[in-house]
Image (cartoon, rainbow over all chains, first blue to last red; front, side, top):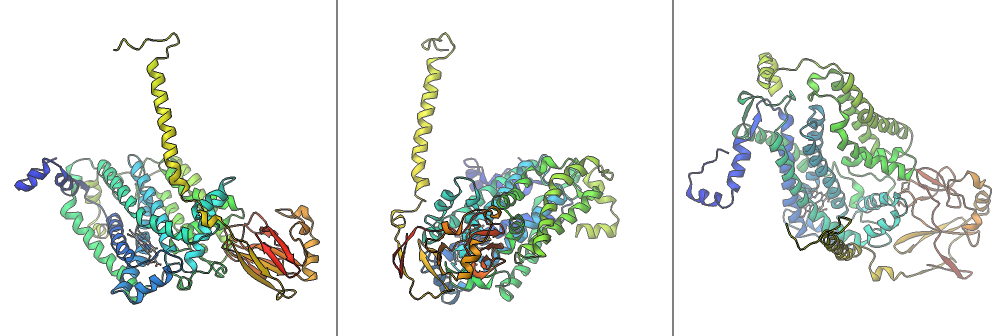
Amino acid sequence: MSFEPKNPVVKWVDSRLPIIGMLHHALNDYPTPKNLSYWWTFGSLAGVMLVVQIVTGIVLSMHYTAHVDMAFDSVEHIMRDVNYGWLMRYMHANGASMFFVVVYLHIFRGLYYGSYKAPRELLWWLGLVIFLLMMATAFMGYVLPWGQMSFWGATVITNLFGAIPIVGESIVTWLWGGFSVDNPTLNRFFSLHYLLPFVIVGVVILHIWALHTVGSNNPTGIEIKDKQDSIPFHPYYTVKDLFGLGVFLIIFCAFLFYAPNYLGHPDNYIPANPLVTPAHIVPEWYFLPFYAILRAVPDKLGGVMLMFGAIAVLFALPWLDKSRVRSARYRPIYKQLFWIFLLDCIVLTYVGGKPAEEPFILIGRIATVYYFVHILILLPLVGLYEKHKPLPSSISEAVLDEKPSAKEAGNA
Amino acid sequence: MTTTTPVEEDGVKRRDFLYIATGGIGAVGTAMAIWPFVDQMNPSADVLALSSTEVDLGAIEVGSEITAVWQGKPVFIRHRTADEIKAANSVDLETLPDPQADTDRAVKPEWLIMVGVCTHLGCVPLKESGDFNGWFCPCHGSHYDTSGRIRKGPAPLNLAVPPYSFIDDKTVKIG
Ligand code: HEM
Ligand code: FES
């Protein structure tokens, strides 16, 4: 570590708790591949969104009441009476969506450039753990306003655990604290919804620690070989990330101020009624692909297992993908499969939002089968048989070889 | 190296026993300390002191249905028509996913009383709809017949029949 502070206060602190040196090391000395594209901005955007959710969430908690008789009204009170309450709530609700947009792009970036391969397996795993925690957090948050979708979403999702043989029913009762989703459920969901984001912060720290141990992947997928290949994170990528943040905030604000309910569901402005299920219940958009997989199977346990399996297989990815080449740039067949897989996930998202009737059931089944075929069969086979394109000998060579025009586009 | 722990013939030392005994007691103690934190999430005493519900049947005409509430759950009370009862009894039980005779599901054939919670993932099914003119759950497409038995779709079981008894001709007590 080349950190030699001049400032006596910094010196005094750092010799007792080397925290400033650590931060300096993380930002200044962290050698970053010099060819990172904007696909590498989504990690820092996810971090920003986590902070946004925590700050707006703490504010909302100051005005929210976690009780079945008051929750709905307290959210309306936030919307109508609390100064800037509408802004806080819309930031939080749309922020959750934006958080998922960013994280999904971040994950697909990893899939395209093979960022999950050795030595980044643990980094990938920690990312998936964050993803799971986010899903739990967002699910429980959505229950808090206690509208119709809140209530029935909570009912359907908690009932998933009822599919577990023998102990299933006891687990569901335990989750509810009663014989149906009710006040005890709402209270514990609020408690956990407040807690989990801070657990996420902890895992994010591990995620970044692992990242700084193995280094960033890059569009070529080859490792940094010498000093020529890297630049310091600060100021180059701090500025690049800030620009990305600016563009992202424009999109966020467009939703926030012009279509704050576009991603939500009107039924959630109807207070929860335990006796009437809305005709068409759908989860929030970010759960739709998994919901489609759940519904594709005409069997309760089977559907639930496949749905959880869809995420579980992602943990095995580093070992299922047999190719040593990381980046899809040099993998002509994998590259095409990647886009088909992305399309498949979009189809699943679409089907998940449609009613459980033909032709959506059939389309959902085909898309579900393909999801698993891609990961469990095609990925290992392609890795074994594909002939990859020649790899550049270094990141520098790859960057300098590109034609000036192509270089502009590629680095933009 | 200590000379105070003599080696037994089979190689087991006094110290090995102490390690295992200490570890074991520690594990049991930890488990006992964790249990209250797990169990506090189970239904509390007031929730468990479940009430029963009495329902007046007088106003329910043949071919109509009301929804009562019991333990926070909807309970369908349907005054079935002769056609519905006939349809429910003319099914080959072998063909059912969860075989059960209609006579085992209704104390009095004209009164079908069951928990209105889909056995798939807990939505409330809609009456008089679906492929079997019974109930249809719109959440993931489960069809129940006029006896509330699952016929088609992802739900594994028939709609549950709660414990109930008729106090007199016009009143039923659920629970
Ligand atoms: C990972 C970060 C988080 C995510 C993804 C998230 C997600 C959500 C979602 C989807 C809702 C429902 C919004 C609606 O439709 O009204 C919600 C509500 C809520 N959240 Fe969060 N949240 C996060 C962090 C937090 C934190 C850290 C707190 C508290 C410190 C918090 C407090 C609340 C409160 C009080 C509500 C109810 C008010 C409302 O519905 O707007 N959230 N959250
Ligand atoms: S909850 Fe009724 S079909 Fe899924």
